[in-house]
Length: 84
Image (cartoon, rainbow, N blue to C red):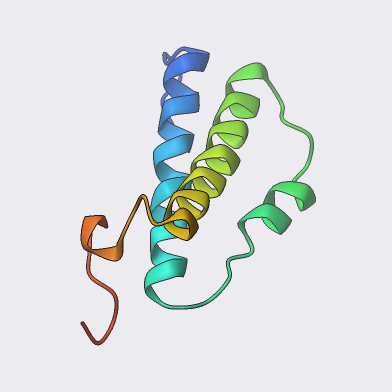
């Protein structure tokens, strides 16, 4: 992450990283440790890091929820699931 980014940009960057982690987990049929990871990390050193962390958690959660509801299918992922 670069130093000159706004909190909004950091949040968006984190959200997309969370989406990628969720797609990977859904594609490979395993649960991620992303939420445990966020619980276990030290408190954010600054607002920009906190924004990235919140974006990561929200992106992961939103992607899984959209997949579970049928709004999002694996065909929409950046890469197809293994064996497809």
